[in-house]
Length: 333
View (cartoon, rainbow, N blue to C red):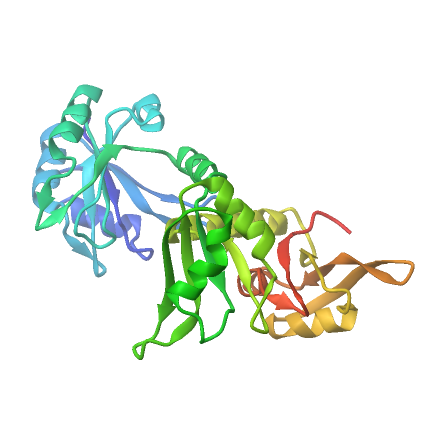
């Protein structure tokens, strides 16, 4: 246990720089900065192995949170047991007033972690009430988000213009079930920003409202109605999208292909290209047809990952003609 984990490293920190830093505490056997296998860029953490345990303890006591290249480093004992690292045993997740509002604590055993949760959850730290709970890995968090998404009760409505208020919006959606809250977002003058939220007391009511009201006309405006997402859910979906796009590019695709569905009958190849051309270079556009009539879906191939990503983020849910379109990665065409 003469090995330390060094986290929150600046991308430009080198092994030589860390060697000179930690040699001040005692003889260093080796230093390894963990890097991406493809790009060889730093992943932001490293391991420092000392000859003597006392020297590692000295570095931990005197150098934790020191500044290297403008960033505060984070030190802790290296966890050599791969099972413990991966299982989450002894891990506690806490939410506090910090750079990102959350942190992680790894105890040596589960009983200590359970005691920390019991005694610290809900306590005030610097006048902030913190949440402390068991650590969840990314796979578990994503599964939890997917489960919540299938049981939503809150919906998001946009494109209804500036004449809407809470009462009118409630009148429109209360026929689908009991509403717990209705809110039209307004500017500093109290005028509608054109979007709002409705919270139902049941998933069935929210689902029915989405199915029946999405794309409907309200006072000459074709509205969009969908499941309301929290910021963490949107970030998780975007992250998953980026990772999928990256995998497609690595497998050798020449360009990135998008699948666009729910197209209005008036949208042809040229119109679809015009709508997406502002996002970057397009290799190919094709609206699928049968006997001269649109089948309601098509494909767009961008020349770069970045352009395709921008198009997905900006255009998904937008109205083309009379319908809100839906965009996903295309497997082949």
